[in-house]
Image 1 (cartoon, rainbow, N blue to C red):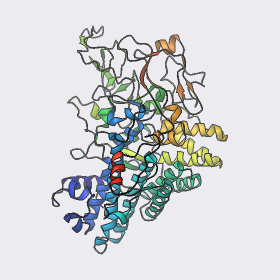
Image 2 (cartoon, one colour):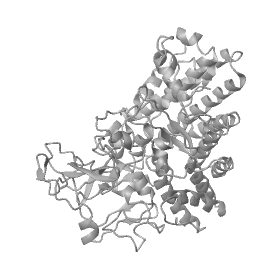
Image 3 (cartoon, rainbow, N blue to C red):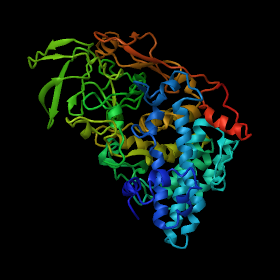
Length: 599
């Protein structure tokens, strides 16, 4: 079986069919001459299949999971990357590019899957029987995956399968519950055919199919099915990776914990997530964590920071769940070869080589306004902001997750799309948390629930030298609070937060607030002089009652930064609008597609 990375390369470079991209991957017109003759060999089925996988990568510079997470309380999108600000500020419309992008591209993936399923019979007598069935199973899985995102984003949607592949007619909306039943049936079929674990990095498997069933069932309130399918994965022998941080960089490419990931190849298909998320040393710091996210990580005592008397607000990054610094670069830490210093007077910082300070350099992460200069007391050199006025990502923090530090450290410059390390879509830790939550919500709480949660927590502390704080309570209310907090910190920046806060019906609380960044000059006032500690309620909603805050201030700012006023209307914002273009196209065919409420 060809490695999927090299199939991507082959598919993007093939010229025998005039254009792989136009004639094979964009399977939107199965009546073209090439598609009439295609799907006739196993090799052609493989190319068509990888075209379906490829459709998951439609957002080239920024993978779609991170776009989704930055429509939530997780982070701030400086410069409105991909149009996320229209979601977070309550201005989403049926003509927005974000709404149309997810709809059009995921439906294109469905169309590619349907074209393959409808036409692959041509190759049945030529292809290897076992591989023929696996290709069908992988296609069923991918179609189900596309639908799983679409129904959570838009609710009831038109349901296309291979029986409609030759039809140009529009379809009315199908109830979400009906689509759920159909895709779960497809996933059941796929799980019965596919190998237990991915045969190659980037491919699906029986475990992946069962994990997706568990996710869909959890999202839609079928807790018995969610626990059952999660249990199948748990019983398969799969293990958590021992190193949490390495999962999200080049060291985790072959981790057995990963069930499905987006694949890239340098020179062929790459992404710019490292640049979007990275510090000014190699990156643009556009997608960045909020103060609310940083404050959501527990202390090493297993408590929220507002419940732990040992928490020191003047040194808020110390004695915290190791996943904080594994996921997020914080001020004073070494990241991308430099000390990350965000203090507005720090026009200079240290370059770090071989673990030691090697050179004083201009600090583009400082928040000084244009034209400010200082004589560095350490090096004696004069450093000037020179008019850049970049204001350090607005939050003071950077995502380490999926940010390729070695690439960011290159001093030859970096362009948006330079990284090839995978972006994870599904992994085993999510399965464990799905199992635990399903059992908690169904009231079937036993030691297996605690074991699943504690396995994830224990791995987080592995190598830290600190005993992890085990969960021992069996109280349903308390466990519900714990599992929601655990999903937030374990799965941060992995694209699942929007669906969590929607199904828990807490988005109207979390997304009707002011999003904060750190104080530009550190916590000497907020945490030291005032001893201020934010409040965290039972839903994990972080608030800052009475804390000093102000909008963007370039220099001398000791208050929290006010980044964005978030707006969420519960009467409409629990769903995205159906694209207006879809409604109009259906109307021209005599089909009425009703818009979601409020749009």
